[in-house]
Amino acid sequence: MTGTETEPGGASRYLDTEGLYAALAETLGEPGFWALSPHEPGLGNETLFLVWGDRRFVVRRPPLAGAPADAHDVFREFRLLEALEWTDLPTPHPVLAVEDESVARAPFTVVERLDGKVLRHGEPMAYVEGEHRRRVGEGLVDLLADVHAVDVAETGLADAGTGGDTAASTALDSGLEARIREWRERFVAYREQTDRAVPGAGTVGEWLAANVPDDRGRTLVHGDYTLDNLKFTPETPPELVGVLDWERGGLGDPLADLGRLLAFWFETEAEACGLPWEFAPRFTTREGYHSRSGLVERYEATTGRTFTHDRFYRALAMFEAATVFEGYYLRNLTDASDRAGFGDLETAVPALVERAGRVIDGEEPL
Image 1 (tube, helix red, strand yellow):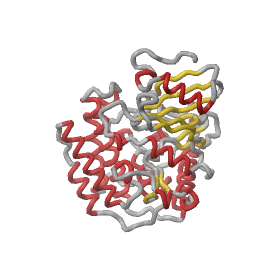
Image 2 (cartoon, one colour):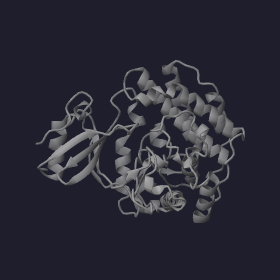
Image 3 (tube, rainbow, N blue to C red):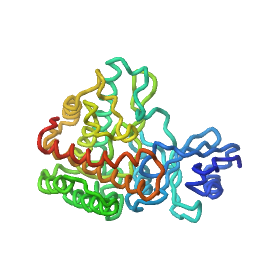
Image 4 (cartoon, rainbow, N blue to C red):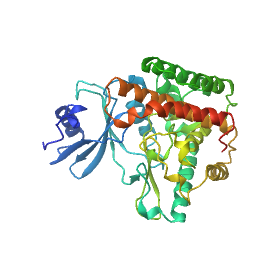
């Protein structure tokens, strides 16, 4: 067994590396060489990169502390990835799920690591030509259409479901009314613990509850379909080669996925509400990238669906994100996380709620 990061803040902070090694060796065989290191950009669940001989994997476990276990369900994601194995969607291959925390001091999952680049820190220099930037928008919309076209009966998801009765687990397995109720309750619970006022949050939640669109039917949905959960080839022309982070995936309203994409596809810097770059890539403000209305036009042409009630779906995405980010801010306040970006959410969450209010009032059109 070759060494791994064991200093404070290294891999041993997240898992018992000897227990992890034993479980992996039983599944994958002895590696000859292995290495494990934390992946800092991961925000919800703790994410680590694993080198196992000549193979590459991603290890995920729930947050160290300060977040309810049901808010970050790595096993929900694993089960969904298993169900999607037969499809043509570019999803990571699931390898191992261990729910017994005595094995490695925490439950964990292992999936293969896809090649490619997540456009979280910015676009590759090779993308600067307008045609390449257009291909990014076309690729992500076309893949979203493919997600929504999956035959859920073939996956077994229509019968089995993917989770229990929590905001994170059922938000995309139930109607929008239940989804909104769960997120409103979670926001209140977080805010009571952060002990601060977030002006407008109650008003936004009430408006969402009172303006739920009619049932559009249910498809496979990703639940957090944004640029920082997608992998592209670093070389040109850009090709979308991976869809990551399915922990909120399941069955739901497909237009909610589109609303999520649009809510964090920025056309001006001000729309980012002061969110740290790791929460909201903003290079889409540059010339050559699609406008939000351009993304909608391509989605409608590809799927045959019409994107109505855009204010509802975009405001819902912002309110959900504000809830998640308030939970991250709570982890910062309670020293459950040392991520610098979590502290910045003190002002970013209220700004995001304010933006949701502007969308509802028609002050930020599509």
